[in-house]
Length: 50
Image (cartoon, rainbow, N blue to C red; front, side):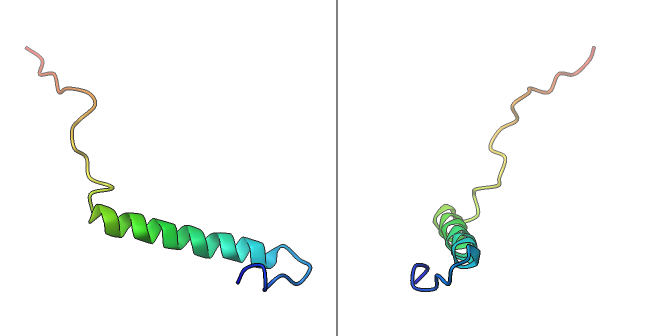
């Protein structure tokens, strides 16, 4: 579809990249079921001062 939309400019290619990138992100979010942006553990342990 992206190749068939070629009209001599880079617009169809850029639009195709945006659409395909969005679809890929959507598939990752569906596959991860919302776990993608959760913090599983803190990289720096909390230290309490004495």
